[in-house]
Length: 382
Image (cartoon, rainbow, N blue to C red; front, side, top):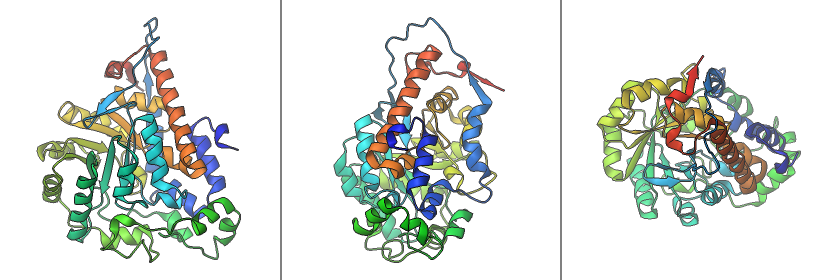
């Protein structure tokens, strides 16, 4: 299978599985415990139906919208994800260029494999920085200042990783950052020569946003679970969030909101947006899916704060259902990570083209010409 043979996100998942060593694929694909929440994140969309109108004159449609003050060509964001050079040698650079070409938001993680400054220089498009609050307050301050100086449009404080979820696939494979070869996975690395050559002979794997503060993950292999459990601030609370919002001074988002009460608190501290998210099912298994929880949160704070439905998106119709459910936009990580792993920038661009086509076709078949016409009366819950 080649990238051109991929016609949906699941096709890219299958191609990524063929091209990645199994510990690396399992890091992308895996989630916490029994992975029930990860599966529900996507299957939740199956519990509602879209109601189309006909004879609506849909020769010209507009898929654009405004998200956190920036115009986006699609109501879709590429969520920030860590360690992207582990999946393809170009990592975040490939994603940034693809997002720029399609005019959509993308984000980079505190644990990105290219620096804040390097990514900012690649695009004038809308970009988000995902902040993990470390115990090292100097590191937190340094990352915020670097984002301010580099012109990032928004800061997303991740609030659902006080400790790591139990990611059993990673425990079995021994996946670390940087990735390391082990006896159990050696054959898998050896039979993926394209990935292995890019990793071994490409630029040294590092996490440059941690420079000067953290050795783990840059030169010393460490599991993501151990990193989260030892390096992140378990004392983070609402006062911390309010203080970071003040220190940042710009558009501020909370990523990982799942209850109506927390959504209300986000409004009270002056957040501009929330990402309704369970971290791709990688934290608390058995928790609700973002789309399942969307109605409750929209009822509580809709119209007071932007609401981004994050996770499980695999189809353009999932985006349309999110908007009909009251979300400002939808977002996801695996939807482009599979494509990145399969074919770098070319893969991400093809994945975005597929989703763009599905959104446009879905809007025409629903009889709508603008995003604001995707309203609650066009959904039916089973």
